[in-house]
Image (tube, rainbow, N blue to C red; front, side, top):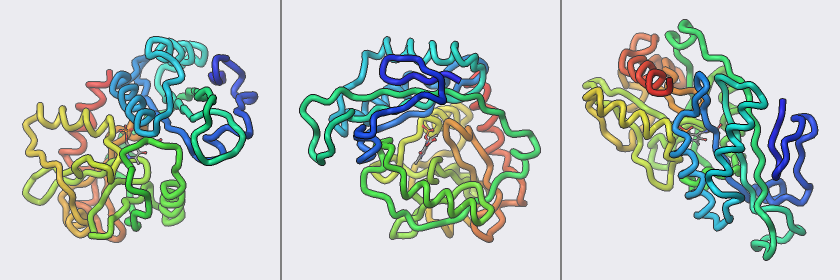
Length: 279
Ligand code: PDD
């Protein structure tokens, strides 16, 4: 495997950043994960737009022009011979002697890796996954895709130890914000497709945005609003979305079985529509 580190393509095993990189010391950086499906990057431009937005919110300068960034992405896929997989890119404020305020002359660091992924089998998708609910203990700018992911890491570990695939984070009022690395969706008993409205409480997923467009095209009854964990447990269907999980049906939330315990038709339909779109 080959990684890209600050202007150079290096063997993955040798890819390293400086010990005083602010990403390492302060989590002072942002990232993106882009799905590559059958040789195509899915929603490349929206991902790069979101990267720019995250950088802008943190006042980190762009490490390079967009055309240059896009050619690094392509070159990395070529060198790693990736047909279906993921690109991970991370930009930090750069290397400087440890001091909390922004350094004066730091150059932003850019690293990029790529890996192959295998798609889940039909049976795995049909059975769906379990999620647990946990309190949302994150900060108030979850709209920025920063590498400061400690609450997410702890939540995902808690899910794993509970034998679940994901943890849905619940705010103080009992409303689900999102998963630790996915957006959350339900289909209510009366057939309404619901996902939380995007504000500073969630990351506005690129997959989420594409699914909203696809749902509209399929004339689904769609509402962007918060829903409580109780409403989710009573839902007809539930699923999660992200660049790495596309649409993955949820068939259990804590101890509540969703629908008949199998993937629902709306979720499966959107999964198919998304993969057709990605193709
Ligand atoms: N996670 N919410 C959170 C907190 C996320 O970290 C992600 C993505 C999403 C879904 O966003 P998108 O549809 O743009 O992938 C929602 C990436 C995949 C990750 O951390 O690996």
